[in-house]
Length: 294
Image (tube, rainbow, N blue to C red):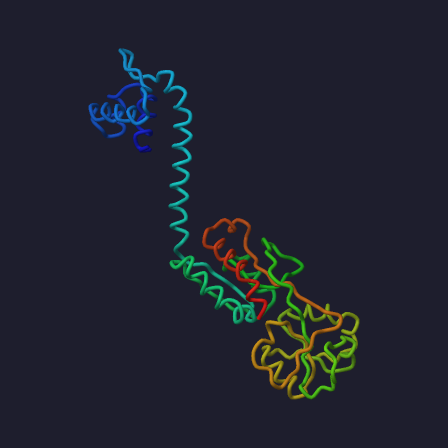
């Protein structure tokens, strides 16, 4: 049924006159009369009474008009939402991510996301400081972040994966047939500590042993740390994503006891219902199993 005819029916009954309604809706009086006759034929029975006092609803019309108004209200909401989604399906979503997540997860995620939202551009920014994504989100400089859980977060947090931590040892380290590396064994050894506040999970994993290591705060990237370890310049701890890729000169051994950091997505709560952001989150959730099984 034509919603335009229903809108005009409401206008006619509210004004009580075809002549008054014609001035509002832009049709001639005879055109409105013909349209209302056509509508009543579609409905299957009359809904209007035409008399000397103007146009009023008959008993059938009085029953239907509240439902017609509700239908028109819902139809307007539907059309508005469709228009909003069309707008949101274009534009740019700003993403900030740890380098390890950007390198190992984001290419595949963004490839799949582009198939869902081909008109949305992704502005990807890699960061090398644990807190920086949250600062960018707080300041409104990014829309969604891929990071690890922090103690203080002013955002909606969506956990994705418990990422294990590994001991990074020279390939010549005498580990024999052991499958894990006790954290106590770091005691007394030179230790290459991550910088940029990525050391929090490492220090938590070391526990009391932290006071017994010989800490070297080398401000270098993950690959350089592994090269330094490979040349016998110390030991280290890194997360699973950090050690993906070539590592011929080092061994990566699970810690004992096991240690993890929680990776996830952070967004502002008011952005959650934005179509493009929600679509990106849905894309990540649907892929996380394949991303973490590599």
